[in-house]
Each structure stands twice: as structure tokens, then as C-alpha cells.
Image (tube, rainbow, N blue to C red; front, side, top):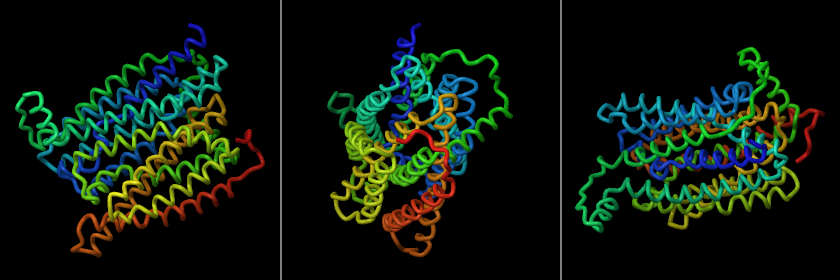
Length: 438
């Protein structure tokens, strides 16, 4: 198979894998799904932390394994882990809340392991195949195409996921077709999970179709070698101001936006919106994926990673300051604003890091991005859960929505503090050895 054909094959498989791996029908009802199954908001927040911690522990080792053992192998493992993760999620009994929590904890750990295995490995595999075919310049177009396709798939998943969760919508559709359905909420609560399980099977199959050039037979997988590669990649990042800046700027924006995005269904409830609209709103935010690559491209044309991420950070903190003022439907603008930022930060991080990373350690270096963002997200999740608990205790008679908005009001100030710490870290680790400027 020619290098160009290998590149085309990997690009197709990569797009399918990413779409089916990331498009999950339970996203529009993520928070309320856990709550409706019997967990508390605090338990839900802690489960998200467990998800981030599992990625934190496995992210960089999986990247090193991808560089040594083979990137395709790690992507295939990610696909199989997603299937197992969704089997646990979809068929966990809900009659025992304590057992439910621990099984969902297992689900979060498996999900984190799948994310860690895929993170960096899939991008590195495709970028390498493009580079071998002298087509590395096509990478931004691949990212833009991925953004558009994911927008469509997210649009469908958000509408369908919320619709099958709402018995009124399902029963109304049944009446239109003359089926006489009479489903109740408990009967439909897991329907988005069953649909996502089907998606996991396609993601796993697409991973198996990827092609990877044979690895160096003398490069065996040894723990000592993997550890040395991880340390070498960490030192390279610390000695590379542009790369270090991109990773720090990515974690600052990603963690705060992602924390809120996992809470959007609760935010919609604060605004008094019915569950049936959650999917429509989620699908509307998904369509922003058509816009975010264009915005990211304009930011890249500013000439430096510092300028691009600087503009993005200002936009993020503005959105965070606005969130607690959830007084009317106009507050939905804040949700769209931050959703757009999530797409932009992912594009910028992938563009700069793939361009600057050493080819032999590309997956390992990319995994440091995932490690840092999930460490930041997990830490922020613990802090947010603590703030929720503290506010609830201080305002014993306060409704849940007031407690939630009170916790959101702390986010922009913490964001500014994290930006300051990130700037100090970059200053401390700054070295004379500089990679090609962005």
C-alpha cells in the first residue's frame, strides 16, 4: 500500500473513530441522568473527578506505550474499553444506591482509561501517515473536517438523546405512528446509554481498520525504557517555551469550560427549561463546530500561540463571569459562548502541538496535554464539589439552584488565579533551548 493510500485510509478511520467515540447520546442529560438514577449532585461531581483521575494516572504511560508498542494498538484498546465501559453503564442495577455509585465509579475509571489510551495515539498515527506521504500540511483541513462532522453527529445525538429520555416526546412520536406507546420515565432513563453502546461498537471496528507502519523490531516495550521516554519528553516540554505555553494555556481554558459543560443540563433546569429542550439546545451548541475551526484559524493567523490563546482566555473569563446571572433565557448566550470556546481550544492545542512535537515522541508529548488538562479538570471538580457542599451547609434552607449558581460565581476568580500560576510556572521552566516558533 502506497504512503498516500495509507494516509487516506487512516484519515477516514480517524474521522469515524473520533465521531463514534466522542458522540454520546447521554450528553444532553448527563447530569440529570445520574441524579434521576438516585445519586446526589455531589456524588456526580466526584464521579467526574474519578474519571479525570483515571486519565491522569494513565495518560502519559499510554502515550509512551503508543510510541513504543504501536499507536494503532492503543487506539484499538481504547475502542474495546469504550464497549466495556458502556456495558457497565447501561446495565448497572439501580435498586441499591451504594452499589450504583461504585459501579458507576468503575464505569468512570474505564471511561478514563479509554480516553487515555486514545488521547494522542490517534492523532499521532494519522499525522505520521500524512507526514510520510509529504502531506502534513493537510492536518488543519483534517481537523476542520472533523469539527464539521462532529457538529453534525453531536447535533443528531443531542436531539435524539434528549428525546428518547423524555417519555412525553417518545409517547407522542409513538402516537403519530399509531403504536400506542405508554412509556414512563424510569423505563427510558437508560435509553441514551443503549444507543451509545451501539456507537462504541462502530468506534471499535473503525480502530481495527487503521494502518500503522511496522515498528522498529529492536524497540521493545520495557517499563524502564518507557519511564525514560516519559522523563525525556517532560524535559523537552519544560525546555520548550512555546510548547509549555500551549499546554498551560490549554489546561486553563479546557478545565473551566469542560466543568461547566458537564453541568449544562443543571443550568438549563435553573432557567426553568423542560428536559425535552435539553437536546435541542445541546444540538444547537454542537453546530458551533462549523464555526470554531474558522475562528481558530483566524486566531492562528495572529502570528503566535500567545496571541491566539490570549484572545481565547479573555473570552473564557468573560463567559465565566456572566454565568451566575441566570435570570432569563438570554443566559443561554453564555452556554453557546463557552461551547464555542471549547471547540477553539481543542483545535489550537492540536494544531500547535502536532506541529512542534518531536516525531518519535509525538504521542507521548500529546499525552502530556491530556494529562495536564485532566489533572486541572479533576482538581477543579474536587474544588467545585467542596464549594457546593460548603454553600449548601451555610445556606441550609437554600434551594439547589441557588447553591449551584453560588458555586458558579467562584469560577472566574479561580480561573484568573490559575492563569497567574500558569504564567509563573512558564517563567520558572523557561529555558534558552527553544523549538521552532509558532
